Image 1 (cartoon, one colour):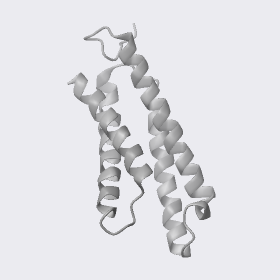
Image 2 (cartoon, rainbow, N blue to C red; image 1 turned 120 degrees about the vertical axis):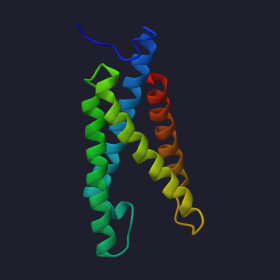
Image 3 (cartoon, rainbow, N blue to C red; image 1 turned 180 degrees about the vertical axis):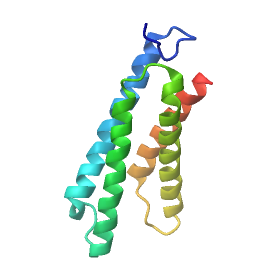
Image 4 (cartoon, one colour; image 1 turned 45 degrees about the horizontal axis):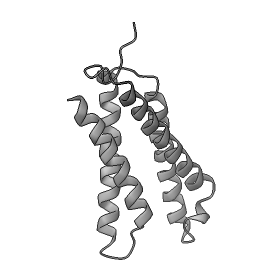
Length: 130
């Protein structure tokens, strides 16, 4: 017997929303990871050190995309908790760091929006299940 996420509501829509969120995060992170690793000069045209650091960040993005992909197969909240917490912390931290970057002109508004939306979504899903 398969356990279902959102089983306290019996809400099939909740399951589909969670899947859509995880699929969107997988596509976003894998896409960012591929660009940062294989095409870093599309993003930054600075020193070799900056490009190397961007490629390392790309590896992290691929790892988060893989985490989201693997979470798609999980169906009960207890199994999803560590991944939801991890993705919530990552996206919240990324959004906050970019907001801080507004003070010195290094922030990207689209990055702030994307990470904020993912952070709020993952926190919302986690909060609903407590």
